[in-house]
Length: 140
Image (cartoon, rainbow, N blue to C red; front, side, top):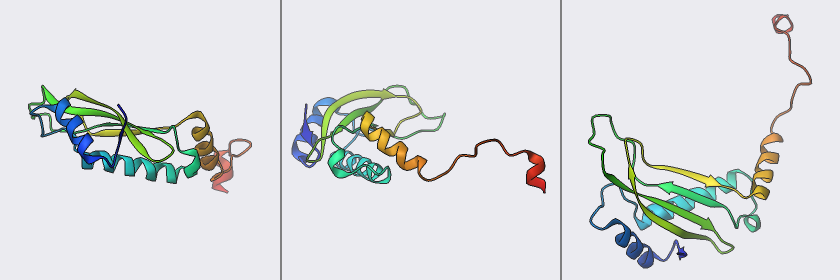
């Protein structure tokens, strides 16, 4: 499967095929677009140049956390995988997924090269002391 996130019609057909009658905790085409937008913003914050973004991924589980009193058994959600291509984001997988009390999480995944750029940006924001500072020196 490789569906452009802006192809709402194909996304809706794929979601309907996977979800059947389930709707309450499942993803919509708008949710998928929001996840791609969030992933793109995350790559911005990490300092990944647009030309270096292909290969990044976003894994997303729909739904939200519910209270312990909620009858959660059998709560149908979706597990969706998005991949950043050279021209934008694509859905590569939509699965029916049963969630318990916890649901609604997302994670951005980077290539090794993207990780190295993000780490270099992070490390440029601080220095490292050559040795620990003794508590007595702090009191003086």
